[in-house]
Length: 366
Image 1 (cartoon, rainbow, N blue to C red):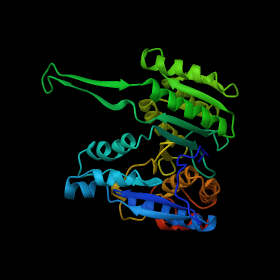
Image 2: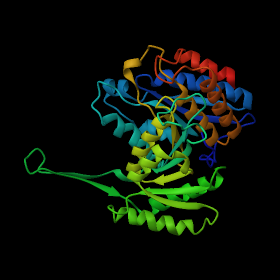
Image 3: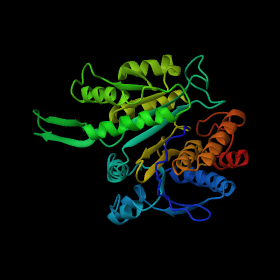
Image 4: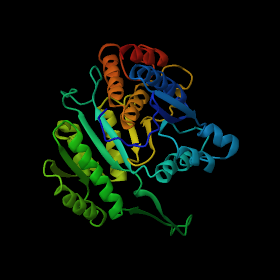
């Protein structure tokens, strides 16, 4: 997990530094992995001399099935007042796909203006990668994804739906303000990251000649303000190719919403799978949300076999965002100790330990 600029500078601090954390355990195995994450975060908070004030919310499939509510206005109002949000997973087999994702996840991102999706792609010791001859020294980069615009803005519609002449339109929305604030965040992040100080713009300027022309122009203009940052450009298809062939070429990648969604899943696979992949939805001036990247995995619910490490890593990222960088780093180091010396695999049911035992191992390794 990589250090990034503090995303909540107005955190409420008492003599013991208390942070108000909204917890959305979610669906399926979400509550199981969040329980282990909270266990680890409580342990590191005791060591670091700060408190976590947990505020639970039952948002997800079960609530929707009972009440037909996704994200009530009253809950959204309360979530605006916390210091961070800790999310398990959203997704229920009895709820039509899209309802929970749009009604909870996308709405939170848009309403709280979480305009950056931050995805570290880092191979930990002892973790298998499908890339031959690549190790932790080769896979350690970060994707900065624009998180509130592009094709996900929901602009579009149908004409003559259900007929042989049906037309479906989905428009990619790219504003100068939205593009520039994402690119500026990426340059600042690259400058703070203690690596190659190289920022790669990922786009498709040869085909998407309007939207990605804007991205390229803004990127070039902002780059002039950061002479210490090496810049590069890659088409998204080439980016996927080089992530597999030469992942060591990348330090930080900045890209739009759709391309970011795609390449971060590829990133999760080369870092060992969804069981270790964590991310943050950031509003650097407001409330940010942190989550494991994998889904709710309902088929494993209650079996005590799901891997909690991604949720634990997301919790570490949350601590760093709150200004507790030492504690966040301690969480990552503990996870690395567990992957490097304890686990047989990251796959559910193949770790050699139960979900709770993996959480205990991380606590013991702090």
